[in-house]
Length: 241
Length: 106
Image (cartoon, rainbow over all chains, first blue to last red; front, side):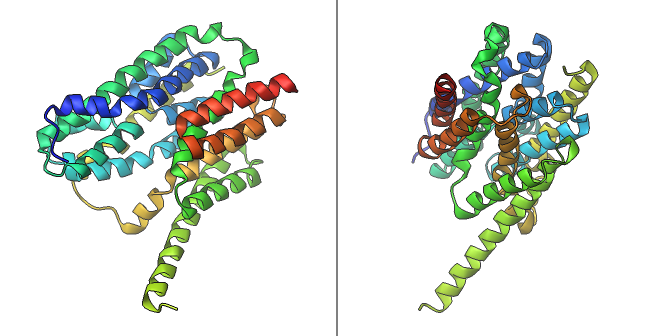
């Protein structure tokens, strides 16, 4: 695919479909955070300072549960660890950009727009650094203002929503919405299963300590399953039956 | 209720830590490569963490005082199924729609 003539506009356009996810997700965060007793300034500060929805929901849910700050912090940071991989994957494309641009790119790094940008970079390998940067910021120009704006909208209408709507359930539903697209291979499915079972098994532990245990067990299970499948494929390739 | 001190210390630390994660390779470590075994495990961070958050929130929700309610379990399963088939938006729509439907029936 040739490089886009207007990289910023192309990024903006390619990311547009994802508003369908960002709007409900950020609105729900505003609603749920107000429901948890945060004031408007706190809700908006969290969305602007952290700008990572899944970890914000995690931190909020654990604090509300009475977990100590360091447990909520570790769990929320664990949720964001996947972005270390995004960061690594962007190095070949944006690594040569000035420090300020890389810092801004890092602040704005979110799941959907990261995925869109890297796919485009791979489709159009002859894009220059400047085109790649403009494309990236075009993607974020869709997601970021909607993230702030809908958090605010959700926070403003939060208390108008009656408890009978069970809005607390929106939190696990949003996590399911983030989880489902990740279940794309047998090792991924196995890891999710291990995480669920270990979480139930260690539910008696205080402070949600079952979470890091379940997450680590699941990561090992997924990695080992992948290695097992790779070894089996290699054996099959060596000695075809 | 969430304490003011707890909220701000958590938010600032989470914002700082999250930025460091995002900036890690792009900014601080340059192009240096992570060891393969670590990258292999990092691939499974999402599928390892999300179920550990979802399962307790569905089985023992704070809103019901920790009591398991069938409509919530059914709605969560519907959300997973719809998410696998139709993606994230499908999961959100199906989860909430099935919850309201099941609550209306029960």
